[in-house]
Image (tube, rainbow, N blue to C red; front, top):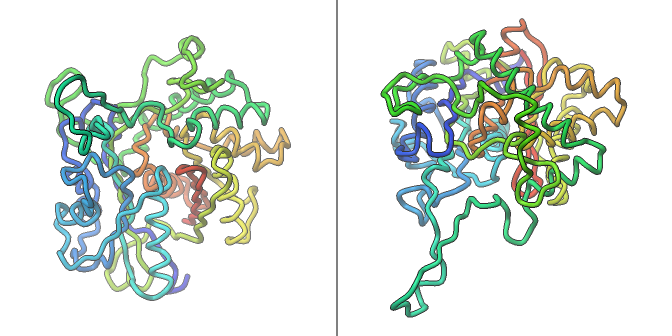
Length: 403
């Protein structure tokens, strides 16, 4: 152990809500402030002990101030951090919250700061419809057409990400049936983990309106489907022209926020905090836009090189389930298509479920993955874990953790 090691000291998140669910009437800044307040409270530090905040913000149209909302800045102020705390809002789509931690680590390694908060928030339920071209059109009478930015979840100059993910899976010989089976596995793993209290350390119970409109304390992610079955998954139609991706083997449009507090080991000692885990290495990569599902594999290879380890040294892996195709494609690439090794990798991947069951508020998911792996490693008594995520036209991040 060295004073310049970077250690995680706290991680917390809200439940991840369904589209139009528990957070549909929430303010974006208030939502993001929840986990920041929680991690400060858990560590009992002063707000002045946080040098910077890096915050994933993929969509500013849900903010009250659509034009340059400085979302990270407004969120940290709502959380009660000092006005003197610098911050950066990050848009790398689904990669944002993990990149937020990555940028904070770079700041600590450079010596510019000693501590940081990384995370993000997404509130799809507040997504407005867009009326384009009205400002200078001299509009006086007639119908106005609105655009739904959530429809197809695509970048306008590119194919839908569901099409790209499905195509890559097919090219690697991964069937629709295998993707449905993975989706079922995610829900079953989540159910077992939840029933065993494995999310208690990370989820902040909130008093909200439940799906029946009743005020209640909620501490379970709304995306989880209790009644899921392979038969039901098989009946679902594919979406947006994809050959394999359905609403069942992909996550929904989800709301939620997550935050991680990390610092140098020296700072940790000065504040008399017990570290939860060490960040051994992080990596950030990008590949051809249509190869989205492969990005986590390349990010993992990169981070293993930095840590001077191989896949057999890893005890736990989480690859975010942007689609079931993503962990299936990436684990197959990591195995070099060695079927026996592929099965071994899968056994230690997403053992508590992932986005298909938990939900995927995209700019928060990277921080959720980090904290889940940290707490799971601690339950296991230590070891090494890798978390990885893709997004933003095939960018990818990975983190190597040690307990």
